[in-house]
Structure formats: structure tokens, C-alpha cells
Image (cartoon, rainbow, N blue to C red; front, side):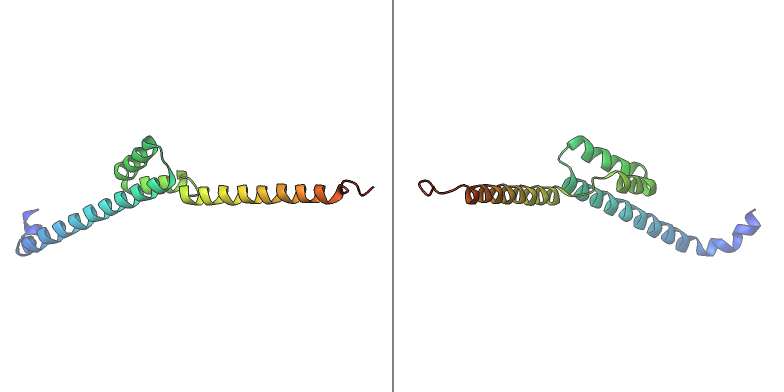
Length: 113
């Protein structure tokens, strides 16, 4: 076995440097996925248990955790949900105001009979 590894001893410092670089890149990728997950879950939920659960899932299962989070995360952000609810409320007010205007237009004016 030593005879097989003998030619690699000259490259040992280079191999250590490559392994250290690969480890640093992996750590940086894990950190960036954790930060992205945290920011995304904060934009989609106010529940702290959900926030920390998503972060634990992303960090605990690095590759599959992100995929699971992407499948389970809420479809819309808090801002999008608020905007949609605001538009729905405005549309409901317009519809009810239009119904009141039509009802008022159908009623004869007092004293016009």
C-alpha cells in the first residue's frame, strides 16, 4: 500500500491545500444556504417555531433539507398575502358601493309619484 502512495507524498501539501479549500467552499455554501433559508422563512412566516424548524432542516440535512423546505414553505410571502387581502377588500367595497348605487337609482325620488 505504501508503494502506491509513495508518488503522492510529493503532492501532500497540495492535497492538503485542496482539501482545505474544498472544506471552506462547503462551509461557505452551508452558511449561505442557512442565511437564504432564514431570510426566506422570515418573509413567509411570523411563527418563530416555523422559522427555527426551517433553519434546522436546512442545516441538519444540507442537500435534502433545502429541497424539503422548498416543498413545504408557504406559497406567498407576508407582503404578498397582505397585498392580496387589501385588493380583495377594496374590490368587495367597490362591489357593495355599486350595489348601493344601483339600489338608490331604482328608488324613486321622494315626492315624484
